[in-house]
Length: 231
Image (cartoon, rainbow, N blue to C red; front, side):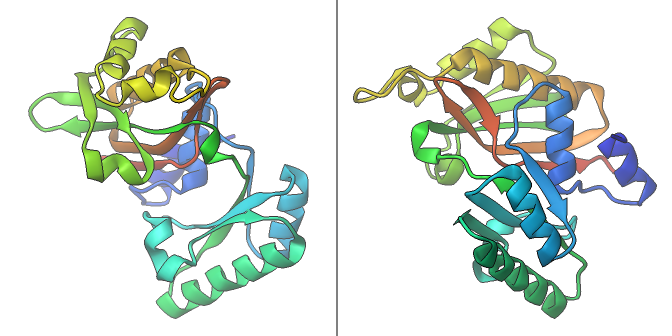
């Protein structure tokens, strides 16, 4: 597969699609759900059958960075269990894209049970004063509510990444809560280190992997937003 950053540069873009962002994370060793990108409803149904139901269908376009808020919720459809449901979701995306005058494909990915683990944010940015910075904290809908994050100047090693995770106020959630199995903190720390390396080594202005679902079996990035530095 061609390098996602180089592809975006060649097309004059600074924002990667989610598929490109996830490809970048995957190359760095961060797990993502199985996914395929489709141009139309027929392709989306084929993708869903290849990935396996239930699936999630999302709008895929560099013009759409916050998919869940786009077009009154048309940008993300979760828990789809049939071809008819996939077609309906794609039709909503296509109608909204046409209305807004943008080109959009759809990303079809395997659904993950978010109740099976803890949602965490792993991000990175290039700060004007400090340079490459990596952060982690409570993710999903709680990111802005609790503002529980820790930061490190990147790159960092595995021990420092783990320390960043363990200093969070929400860290006890990862240790097992009300009978739940302890999360794989090592896998989360590996993801934090990998994002730090990406920001330090590539011309990336911002990475936002949110949420990263952390379970007893590992850490998987359910979404990915990558913005490149201006050329």
